[in-house]
Length: 115
Image (tube, rainbow, N blue to C red):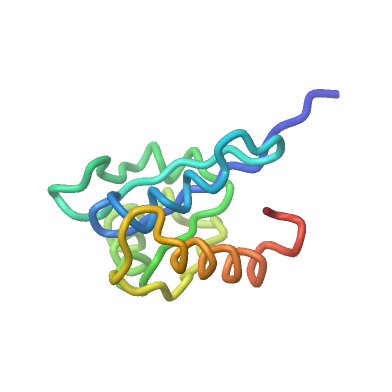
């Protein structure tokens, strides 16, 4: 039987700090494949319908990101598990506090064994 990793998509505005840090938390994770993208035109990687379609679970940093995805990609988001993590844009890439907050919120929504 073929094992299929859980596909997590992390979304923030610019895909430079929050969502990219979240993606990095899952580097080399045996059961999770993570990607990240941003909603803004100048984002490092801008989210597309393809990203949304690929994901099993979509985790956004703020409510505005949820609203953006539902407006921009309504068909791709339909039926997807979409989680708002409520993490403000006040952290730098790989900030230790950001990593702690991400781990706490991810455990809250995805279970203790995720990280």
